[in-house]
Structures are given as structure tokens and as C-alpha cells.
Image (cartoon, rainbow, N blue to C red):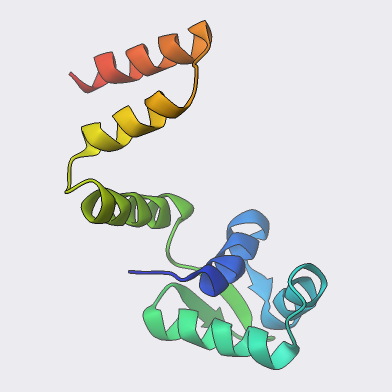
Amino acid sequence: MKLYDSELNIMEILWRDGDTPAKRIAEITKEKVGWSKTTTYTIIKRCLDKGAIERHEPNFVCHAVVTREQAQEHETTELINKMYDGAPDRLIASLLGQKRLSTEEISRLKRLIDSLE
């Protein structure tokens, strides 16, 4: 499922804080993003309609159904398909070409690759 930036703002709160009343989510988004309560509730409704979150009573408590890892996997797959013709190695080559890696970072990547074989 595609989550847009506004929806990810809601999801980030739930991933960080766990189950949270919609009223509290509105307070957080007002403080951090400047959204009105109406805007926040509209975005929460979109997340509910997509099945990304569930609503529990009493107090309209929101619960994340989609995990951060699931959202990351979807976004990464979409990026690879859109920008790298579905080739994950091209994404990795692009990332590695932009930054000089430390010895420790190279070692971690090697261990990761070895574990995939």
C-alpha cells in the first residue's frame, strides 16, 4: 500500500509511541507540522480507509496495522522499480557511488551480503 507523506506523519507517531488516541495525534501534528485538528482527522481517516491503521474505542485510539518495515519495503521496491528498472544492484551502486564508506561500514555490508548467499 502506498502511504503518502501526510499519512507517514501519522504512522511515524504510531510507530514511535504505539497506540495513541486521535486527539493526542492531533496535538502532536499541530505542534510539529502545524495541522489543524480537522486536517489530522482527515489524514487519519485516509489511513483507516487504506487499512494502515485501526480504530479502537473508547477514545478513538489509533493502532498501526502496517509496520514501519512493511512501509519501508514497499517504498524501497517502488523506488527500485521506478528509478532503477527493478534492479536492486543498480540502487546499491548508486548509493555507494555517492559516499566514501568507512572500513566498518564496508565490513557491515560485506557481512550482510555474505548472509544473503
